[in-house]
Length: 528
Image 1 (tube, rainbow, N blue to C red):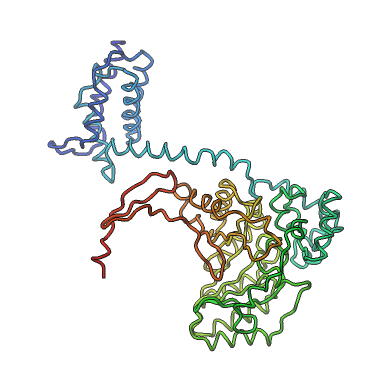
Image 2 (image 1 turned 90 degrees about the vertical axis):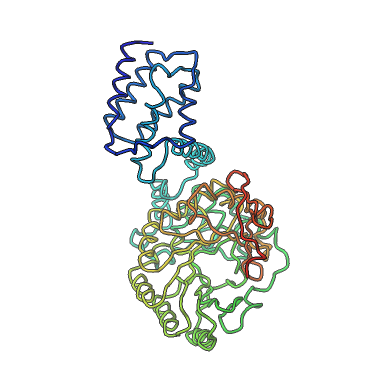
């Protein structure tokens, strides 16, 4: 012990007496947990502080005086705890009253009366919680979003523009993206560095299934094979032929009460407004509806679907989809929305699309104005399908920002796909990236068993449950989607966290760490 340092420490403690200017009632005493903490710190130990440790203690006391910060008090108590746990004797420096006054200063200054013991406990909980996400925070650095590889994507775009002879003006337009769409193996070869075997397989699959991706989407592909999630979603692979079983009837054949209408629920229905998409996904639920060629749907067909909605007063929510609703002309979108806005019992509308990520050039000012005007009359939500963080690029970020100002909500309906988003890191990263770009992760659909062609992309529900449950307690609650199976309607796939029920309580399992807690419940027999 350095007696000079001890004197400085004693003086520093005296200087703290009236530090925070709060009147602490004379009868006040520390709460039980803080009192126990202080007793533990001041238990007699064998070892004295070293000179360096004394200097550290003095600095902590001086920081309290200098910064007048509650955090400095907590830092001091944390240091004293650590020294005590190492067998250091702190009695030469403090008496119980010294530490109790500091603790009361903290409690009476804190806006919510948080005690020293309470705050140290909270910090301990956060330290333990941080361990749960440490692996994710490390791994997410390698799970890039499109925002984090901007230069690479720009280089890819420049190469594709050159190889397909696309001008910058054409690249930046929706019409240009469609004009130079990639729908055969030879064109794809110009855009991507494909192995001969892969090209042969694509040609074979294209005999049965359509391929279409825009040059923009192709620029997001970093590796031209099935290990790349962008490639895997858009380029048909030989598994689609190998997996093929009996063709099942289109879903609409079971649930189509009127022309263009799908309806499974009493208050909600879908208008399948087109079979066109800017990109045909390799996992498309409506693979049979898409057909072999694009179809132009007449205004008379739309009128029949609107007439059914008008005559069915139970309908309050209408989803306009396809295909992709945003492939409709602005004129048709405006007409359909106007018709729905004039039906009193229709209270809200949705437009289903992937274009904000597959072809963001589509989202022009005219479309935004149409959406905004209709949204002022009745809310519009835009459910999208964004399946991995790589789909969020600087361009799609810009478009999502504009859309978010024109509609009431942007929602993402993710499809759980092997090799795309079937790990905790990939799904967490996707959901956080969506949230950061104005999109609410809404559903995670288990990849449908209806179409055998993409059974190689399916993920066991047990894996999906583990991924979704792992999010609770670790990422923002409104970034956690619902896990759903589409089987004659949307069926939740979440695990139950109710382990046991008794008369007045339920035992719950915390999904983030597996620990159990008893939750007081109302006796069901007393509820009527």
